[in-house]
Image (tube, rainbow, N blue to C red; front, top):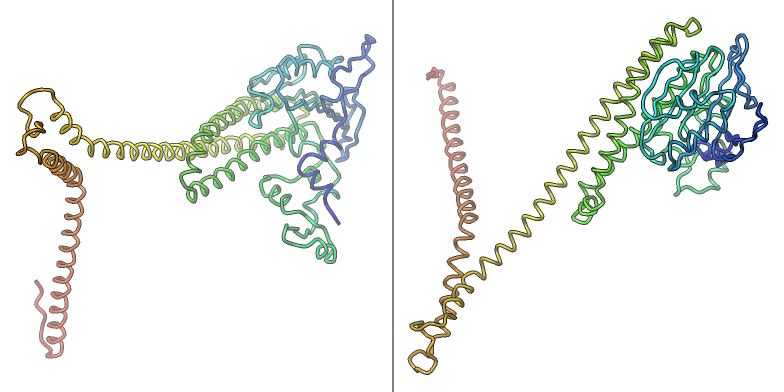
Length: 457
């Protein structure tokens, strides 16, 4: 069975098309149909019966009754947009019945947790460009029988799908580029492509087909926060894999690779992304404990879900430590590249200084004999006894050059000579110690054969 459709489902492309319910014009009480942003915002509505079953429903923003509860999810487009545009998107799909105060509490930047118009509202919205993969925004409005969530872009594993469509429940055959397609068809079974397997290895969670269906609003709140933490963990895992591969390339690479990394400012950009990620995690550390505190006072929030929230808060703190370790690694790699660049600059300066030293005596000689004064030797070309003046000047330049080179190379020659002397002394000491050891061992063996005693010193 070819899993091309499932491949797209895992990559988040086919699933988004399946999940997509475009913003449509609703019949408003005031008779105004707002469809300016149709297609820009994705919406999904579920109703849960409280017994472990769920159904898709119309986007009417009506709360459930009795044991039933509803979930309405809005997915904002992940492209560069102003915050006012995001607010306009939400006004288009949530008003009415929600008020402007509710909309602003969901879309504003920064951490927040509190009661707005009788509902519990919390958000973890980080500032930054919306198109960046290190900008996370998740907000929720929770009541006893309904939950409304808003996210920036797709959050993996946030939705639900039937369990029998899960790829992880299959026994696959891995299809690599070197393997033939005919052989796979003959063997039968589920064929999974190699790049899909690489994607699954970077996931820290199961796919949507394995999500347990919430039986209460508290289960749903835990599920939303859990998927947010999993999303952060996925980004951290990808960063670790990318950093490991870059370290390996740096160890194997040469001058061109290191120069390209320095020119592209790869590691400073990665460090900036890590700081943004740390800001998102810090917002979660501020918000989720307050969510747990406020939910513990709700009669409809289960105590087991309170414990689950505590575990998620602990995961978030450990994730923050892990991101800190990655940031330290990035700083260390950048320091190594800076040191390498300094060494390259020092080598070039060394060669320039060497050339300047070589031409220094020549400059001195030409400067002396170029002085327009009397008494300079070998400058009178008409006198026959001074016909060897040019040769004498050249010899003087060579002598001065040899003296300068000797002074320049003397430290290196001295270090080589001293190293050779140390090696010779070590070999001599080793040979003397070996002879002494052999002599003493031979004497002990002779005494043992004669039955004598060994003197202890």
